[in-house]
Image 1 (cartoon, rainbow, N blue to C red):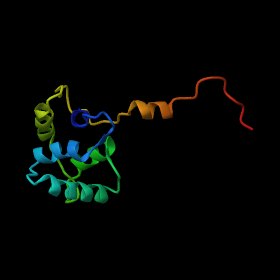
Image 2 (image 1 turned 135 degrees about the vertical axis):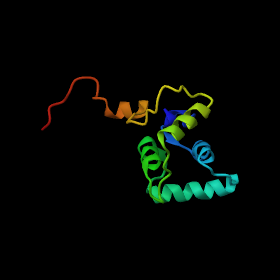
Image 3 (image 1 turned 180 degrees about the vertical axis):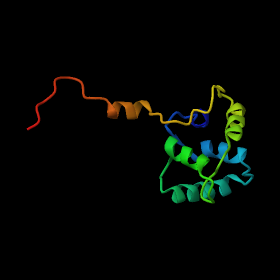
Image 4 (image 1 turned 60 degrees about the vertical axis):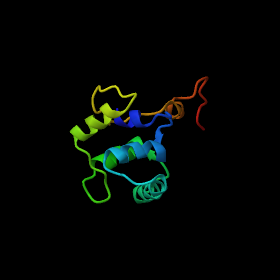
Length: 115
């Protein structure tokens, strides 16, 4: 639910602006320019080009220096602070976007024999 609340674009990935809301909630107080630099470092450390649900889930559960650990209470507070949030729980489990569902869906029409 937190990821969906942050992902206002509905893209399935958190942009720098969307992720900044999370960072500010967890104590980041820098400028936009400083955040852009931090976001670039975060993506590099996570070895990703964009922050997807699985990456966000890993970050908020990672208690090492590389993570952004948040307790369930902190995540609930974040969820409640989001304007479009529906505080229905901390749903950080797997989810797929419509585009991913289309890729995973079996092709329609007659199937061809493999050969």
